[in-house]
Image (cartoon, one colour):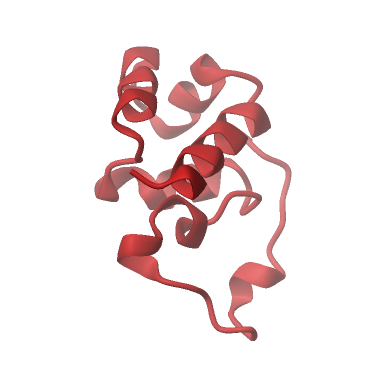
Length: 86
């Protein structure tokens, strides 16, 4: 478990208002969000949905660096910020 992954998940929850808001945005239960917090990571199959739900404020690279590494400096993730949880 990496601290950066937990911080990214907490930032996603904050971007959506709370765990319920994030859960609704990604189509899971609030209990699933709490489970992710307990385990310290977002499941691989939900990472892209969380990134989309936060409007790119929290990226796949932050949520799961073990899977996605770091984005290249010219990667589009650096320019696509939208309003979260919409």
